[in-house]
Amino acid sequence: MVWHLTSYWKSLITPLFFCLLLQPPQTLPSITTKPNIVLLMADDLGIGDIGCYGNDTIRTPNIDRLAKEGVKLTQHIAAAPLCTPSRAAFLTGRYALRSGMDAINNYRVIFWNGGSGGLPPNETTFAKILQQQGYITGLIGKWHQGVNCESYNDHCHHPLNHGFGYFYGMPFTLISDCITTEPPEMDREFRRKLGLYTQMMALTTLTFALARLTGLISVGWKTVTCLAVFSFLFFASWFSSYGFIRYWNCIMMRNHEVTEQPMVTERTTSFILRESISFIGRNKHKPFLLFLSFLHSHTPLLTTEKFLGKSRHGLYGDNVEEMDWMVGRVLDALEKEGLKNTTLVYFASDHGGWLERQEGKRQLGGWNGIYRGGKAMGGWEGGIRVPGIFRWPGVLPANTVIDEPTSLMDIYPTVVHLAGGVVPQDRIIDGRDLMPLLQGKVQHSEHEFLFHYCGVHLHAVRWHQKDSGAIWKAHYVTPVFRPPGAGACYDRGYCPCFGEGVTHHDPPLLFDLSRDPAEAKPVTAETEPLFDTVIKKIRRATEEHRRTLTPVPDQLSTYNIIWKPWLQPCCGTFPFCWCDKEGDIKLTDL
Ligand SMILES: *[C@@H]1O[C@H](CO)[C@@H](O)[C@H](O)[C@H]1NC(C)=O
Ligand SMILES: *[C@@H]1O[C@H](CO)[C@@H](O)[C@H](O)[C@H]1NC(C)=O
Ligand SMILES: *[C@@H]1O[C@H](CO)[C@@H](O)[C@H](O)[C@H]1NC(C)=O
Image 1 (spheres, rainbow, N blue to C red):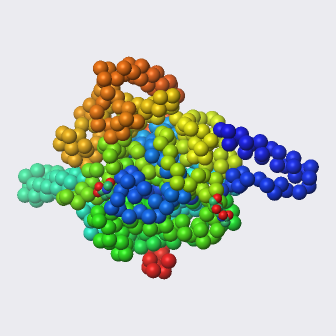
Image 2: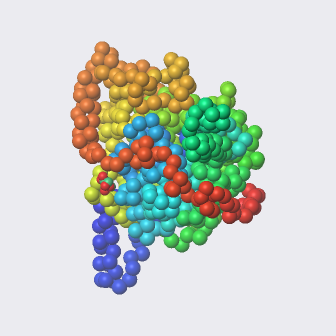
């Protein structure tokens, strides 16, 4: 706030100076110039996967360098434990349920490029404000915030409709189905259900046809033909599901154009890196915002040969080390263009590592260090506490660690203010400007309370009691781990938010994270004299927060989630969607 006022004041007196002296002032400190902003976001990376957060066997020298030259946050919190809602909150600076981007049922992320849900066009992303402030804005990599509303190319949810002037990447997210050699994630479910219907239909048709032929019943051939057509359609969609998910979801786009359908996964990594470096190069003379949204380290862990078998943690470790190398290449590009001191670089993960993602004994999800729980769990720290690093040489201190609670939603007001913009006044913004904290001008984060949602269900609340330094966390709902004590929900692949798979706590489970960051042992009214006071305080804050929520259309409703042929982005004539518009490129070319 202090800084914001100063910059506002300066923006007022600068023209005045100019008029009076008829020469531009020469001594404005660098902070008043609009810095370039590079946001690096990993996918499903755990806080325990990174060297500077305590991992001593995965090699992440470039991310570690970023921390050494900047500020490392130890309590950086994602607003949701899954991609779609966490990224919606990140982009809008608001809890995902304010934009309708959090789950009301079991569909907790966007499932298809051909669905109708997505980030509503009337939400204002920070990219949009930066664009209005004269920034060149680009998104490279993963989006996962929807594509269309009503037709296959209205692109109402597309990055280009949300403030990004350039987009190259996946409108969806990486899934195992994108690689033909991997056991598919989505296909399995699909096949199981459709396969059953198909067989029933085929049997019915056959029965009717035989009965008709033998004269047992007198149904018309029309009926039999009808049934045959239906069976054929079911068969077709059943077979097509073997691999067709790849055609529907695993696509790459450049701006509004589909460039690869399905994507050629072998070269995706090099394309993403090439695009990022070229974006920096061609925009070095203007202030720019680059959001590099990695496909790493989400399964199926696309990794190029150069990194395969090189880490001590199997394919997952190889993939993380490759991502770190990409981070290094981007930092090198900034340095080479002479932009190091004029660029704010940020690194984070969208949420915690995915504990249940294993194949046999092989761990394919991330590692959340000492923190309990993981991806998909709204309350436990492992699902939401992520790495958070800022670097801006000369403006932010180097080699500094800050333990205050901060949120991924804080990026929004932070970059908006740096760009000289103002956050929207007609809605609630939950993020807070981080600059005063990062610069060491204030001791405490502005967040007193943070609310931890699982879908639209409030699972836990964090209270930072600033005078004592305690960080209380009350859990109202926790997932039931299976097998019991396993620390995750191995039987279902991820933990649910409501229903039989959760336990309700009244009074809530209470932890003081400043003394027990691993949430190992809850305090009770017997062991903690402040127990009742803390619970009461948190309850009041929650009621107040609840009053600020207003109903909005559910973007993840069943209707919005399901695949609709007329919304499918298609390179060609539907249903023959196939293209490859990219030449070949090797990593060594870079
Ligand atoms: C480092 O990361 C790997 C892979 O996620 C994990 O298995 C290992 O336990 C981590 N090591 C430490 C010390 O956290
Ligand atoms: C960049 O900032 C650092 C740290 O303040 C300073 O030592 C260095 O000289 C600066 N480099 C340039 C090119 O201004
Ligand atoms: C966007 O539109 C929806 C539906 O009309 C409305 O409920 C919501 O409040 C609007 N959001 C904003 C930020 O204006």
